[in-house]
Length: 267
Image (cartoon, rainbow, N blue to C red):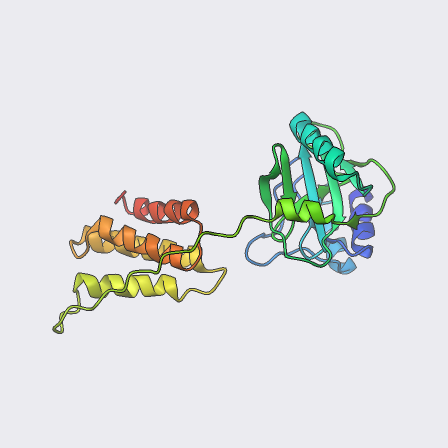
């Protein structure tokens, strides 16, 4: 049984990297990846995982590892990075050659928390930070080459200019969600009463659950519309307004609502 990948995972964990197994040649975690990241530095867990999947690639969860990884994707990413460092200056740091480009490993350090982004820094440059992960050497890339370290440098502190470029612009002010007055009388199926309740579900959702609550509410709108208790368009518009009020991006909210409506054939 090969122990190469297990040794690599244990070495990274000893350096503070939170690791987990990934299906060889892919970016698909072999352990459940959801609201809670499964990555660990625990040698006993790591040994168990790579005894179960001895050829598994090594994934590194960037957030809990205190890392921000700048992903230079292909020639476009490299060209963009060279243009940026010509302006701001080169920063030597731990660098990995991937199947198509390079990963620059930086220490997240202090400052505003960064999350994953795609092409926000520049064309061909992605960022993996809180909520993300990268594949580490000596794992196999789908192209048939191995990820490999290009140097012996330690991860350098993230340059301020990279953090600035990787920070999304402040969101525009969100409109307040509409407030619905329940219909007078005691009818339990009044459309405005139903809609007010569904809007409130979205408004009361805790951070991290808002998208799930929005999807649930969209399915309920579809059910009520199918039964003739709600106007579908009015219900969808109200949920989108509520989603905007709690800070969900418009494109994400639209996709979630439409997905909820399609679930029951309403959209």
